[in-house]
Image 1: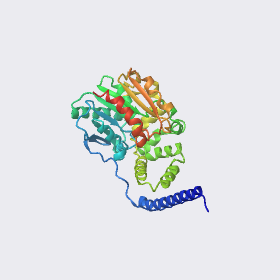
Image 2 (image 1 turned 180 degrees about the vertical axis):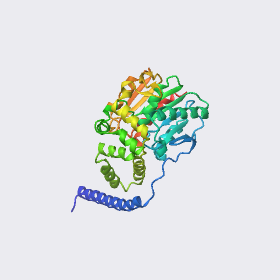
Image 3 (image 1 turned 60 degrees about the horizontal axis):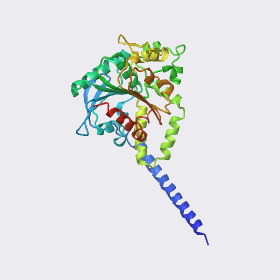
Image 4 (image 1 turned 60 degrees about the vertical axis):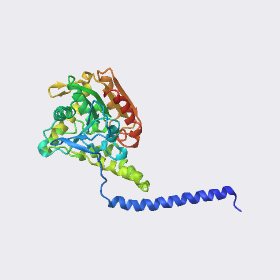
Length: 361
């Protein structure tokens, strides 16, 4: 006669097998649904497009609470990606978190530059577009002070603007995983070596730079990344919530934009080759982007496992800034999970809210 332990063990094994069978069935059923269904909807938080100009869209999100902070937020998206990563899903929306916390949120988002917009350069993005949007935010809210928030290259553009316009009433500068020392951008620096990479011929020949250049670079940074992601997705295909979120993030990561030709040329020559932002010699719009000119409160969040913008590339922002009130935090996560998803909701968002809230009154 089997012992009680053996009986319990058999019951446990049976339950484990039953669970495995059920997940296998669900994985296959949902796998069919996955490949047959349309791309998931993203960026659904209510908003108005208050300004559109070529590649630029300026959104104003509708408030979710009655009382809002006096100082509005202007968020600057990286020029390579769509802004809906800030609003990827209702349960994982950075925008909704900020709205529920009482912030008045504006977002600079991008469309693909048209062929006739190939002449847009670093000055166009860092000065013209940001300056234009700041004016629109002030007109809409009636407030002069605005907090500028930038992600990745959006952080670079925000830093350049703050450094070249110290006289403007920018209340706070917030950056996420923002490169300053482009010599530490590893593969990107290697791929764009001046002796091998003829950026002038590329831009003069094709105009705007294809997103395939960047997608290939990202894949080379982590050659097995896509395979590992697909394996993880398949292993968890039974989990509807995880699959839906994963699909949305996959959609965003593949939804890359071409770069305006002259902007791409400026980025390669001035930032990658000559490292002018780090060296303090970058001239944009007739002004030197000296990070030491930034005197306003500064918050910079970097990711511990960021393979796109390593810490060695981003660590210089806070030390170089002339601000007395400046904070750098390093959090677990990668380049994207730092700002989007469940980990960001637990780590970055509450920390930023605590810092920004007392500086937005």
